[in-house]
Length: 335
Image 1 (tube, one colour):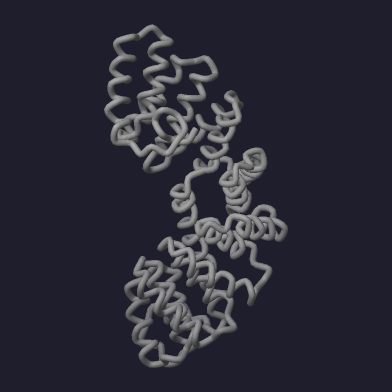
Image 2: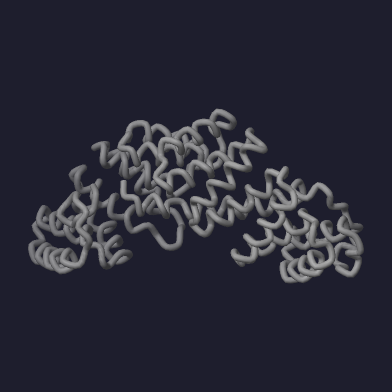
C-alpha cells in the first residue's frame, strides 16, 4: 500500500471523531467550572471570577455561540493569564472554528500551566492530527497516555500518528492495546486492519475490517477497504458485495477507486456488461486516471463493441503518458 494513502486515509473519519469529542467532552474537561443559572448563561458581564468565566465559556461552546466564546475567552485570559482551564477552553473554541495556530498556542500555554491534566495534550494532539502534523501529535498523545493509560481512543489516535510516520509495528501495538480495553472503540478494528494491509498481511486485515463492519455497517471507507482486499484476494463475489455498498453510500465526493474496483471485480467475475457503468463512473470522477479506460477497453472487446474499445484504448494511451509509474498493471497503479 502506498505511503501517500497512509498519510491521508480516514481524514473525514478523524474529523468526525473531533466533532464528537468537542460536543460530548467539554464539561468533564472543565471540572472547575460552576453551573450558571439559566437566566445568566448568556450574560458575559457576569464573568467576575475564573469559575464564572469557565462556566460561561463552557456554555457558549455547548450552545455554539463561538463568536461570544472567543470574545469572552480573550477577555478572561487577559484577566486571569495563569488559569489553565480558561486557556484550554479558549483553545477548544479556536479549534472548533478551525483557527489552528491560535488553538495550538492556547493549548500549549494551558499544558505548561498544568502538566497533570491528560486532556490538554490529548486535545492538542487532535489539532495536530487535523493539520496532519503526526510527529507532534504522537508526542502529545504519548504524554496524555502516560497520565491516563486507560484511554483506548487516545491509543487509537496514537496508532494513527505512528502509522503515518512509518512506525507501523508500534501502531499495531497501540491498536491492539486499545481494542483490549474496548473492543468497539471508534475505528480501532479499521485502523488495525489498515496497518496490517500496509504490511501485506491481507488476511489479518480482512478479518479486522469485517469486525469493524459489524460496528459500522454503513461506513463507506471501511466497505471500500474490505472490498479492495477481497478483490486482491480473488474473492470476487464478496468483493462485489462490499464495493457495491461503498459506491451506494452518500459521500461527497464519491470514491472513484470504489467504482473502479467494483467494475474490475464484476469483469473478473465474468460480467463485463455490468462492469461498464461503474467503470465509466470512475472515469468521470477521476478523469486523469488511465485505469478505468484500460478496463473499459478490455470489457468492450469482450462485448464485441470494437469501436468503443478503440476509443478507450486511445484514452488510456493518452492518459498513461502523464500518469505516475509505480508498478502494478499497465496503468502504473498497484493492483
